[in-house]
Length: 384
Image 1 (spheres, rainbow, N blue to C red):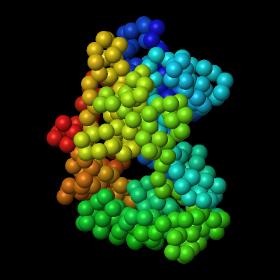
Image 2: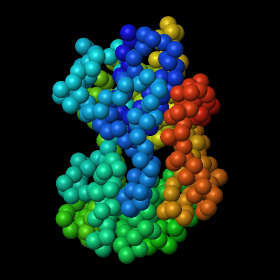
Image 3: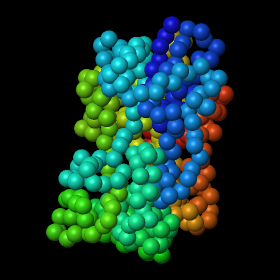
Image 4: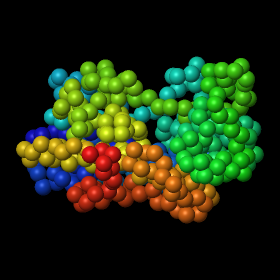
């Protein structure tokens, strides 16, 4: 019996599990185990909606796994022994493996600034987002720290859903820095219409009970702080002796295997995946393809064949601006912006289509895993 263990049931981990189950369902000598801290699937693309007080579908992992043969182990990974090929769960249970897929993802980097870890809310889970939502009716001001895509979406959602709030968005860069000038102008106008106050070009130095302090000595008062400024990965990979990059992500070869321990595949946000244009950044857009490719590679190895190189090119940058507006920037495979972009109702439809697609796509990866390999852009000359 060949034991394959997948750590983490996010977008990349679920794509791996369902695709691998589909590819091995006629084999009686393969066992696939999925380890996750919860039996609920977290739609990270929608956590800003939960934070604003919206109720979303309750997506249960056991329901999706029914009939696939994948065993779900609910618990937190507390240790990895890459030499003995064993996983420790909740410091109590030990799972042996022949092949490991590391898909533990990333969380908000609240350790980067004093006070953020103790005082700021995050969007790391549905529970964390709901905790902020419960507090909103009693608040007057909210500071969203981090002007990247997550920060922009969260600020817009909070301002639209709770017009009584004064929402301030703070960060080093201008909101929508990766958009074309025209698309960025549309974004700026949308934030202004929603009443979001923007403070760009600031270095956040401290989160306090009363707000946020920045490098120039100014203070932004806030009853609550939402931290979206950067992410960090679990230290488990580095502690296990896997080779990691400066951000703690597992360094992979072209087939997504650890360069130091080839029996370990790394996918999603926890993997440092190199392409011709550089290292991929963490998104659902790239995470699910890494999972599907890892599953195909493992299946090839089980059949005695060598895995193929992974190639991926970005397609778009969809950005919601509340429920009634959005902007979608189309990109070259290296993630640089094209001239083409969508705004308004067409962009809302596009963004909603993207956000709602992963859950049904997981089932299709089981029923037609080969078709799943066609679902992303390979990047052409950018990745060849």
